[in-house]
Length: 255
Image (cartoon, rainbow, N blue to C red; front, side, top):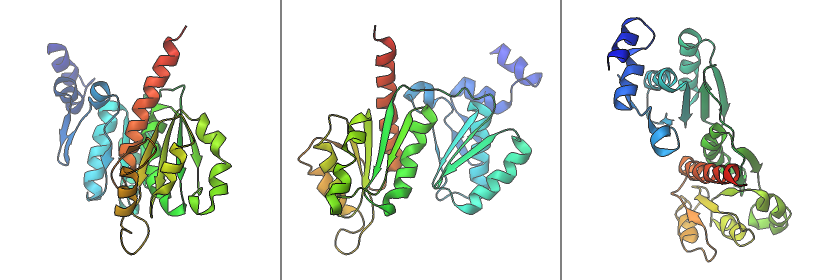
């Protein structure tokens, strides 16, 4: 305790860093950031930008960088991203910002990038499923897994599904995003011995077009797979990351 207080007093540790050390989280005007989640849960906290003001997004991202040297954000919009980039120029000028879709990753030079000996396949039935797949990539990318993105292989033209089977089978875990009736994850799961995490997407129209038809179909899948909620790309990515980390650990410990 005294060492922490002395570190804060002499400027080597910020109050937020000290609070994170003591409580596992750091508090600011936008809320509390769970700085210890990676150590406790195996995956870091990400900031859901949807529904937050640009100022709140900036405050939480800066706290994340201050306490963990990395900030992960999902479902950002252009206004939030502009505010974040402007703020980083002043508070963390040496940080690196990566963006794919609406997902954002910011790391400082002090961040120790992990590497996993595991491949996460991220598969989409169609272009409309892309944003959900982008969100699913965030955590496995951050964890250092290899990402194999396979796009637009929906079952309306089954040949385009079947000609990618070798890639599906080469992955250690698969995230498969599909809307409408949600058939693609079920078909792929019947072709591989790889864990499949299905993400129903809120695409389509008419009855069940808000993702409910896809969710219902996947919950009734005859082939064995896991299903997350509608559009829950982040949850699928988190589950895939935990599996990839376990596989990497098993490979690392094998004789």
